[in-house]
Length: 127
Image (cartoon, rainbow, N blue to C red):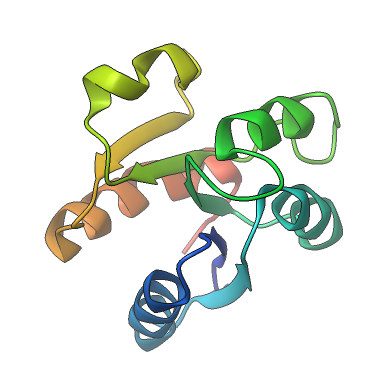
């Protein structure tokens, strides 16, 4: 089974970089550029994992998370939030949920791999 990972970031350089990297690891990648598209594509594709920027046009990643939690089809999807801002500044926006993690940009690919391995099984992925 190939893992489906949805990446949501308003910076096309980030989505391209992460998308190419994850595709090279044989994951199926879905790319979106805002929080509204994040919620829509998550409901449509039901990915095993979402990687979402916190601050995006349309809707913040944290606001999209709240929408996802109200839909039974998407409520169980783990989310890795990313941002250039430090965790301390964003802590009030981040959900206290065992299926969520946070990593600050620039993202270490080793750290990204570790977090993906940790979160994918929570989203129903079985290698």
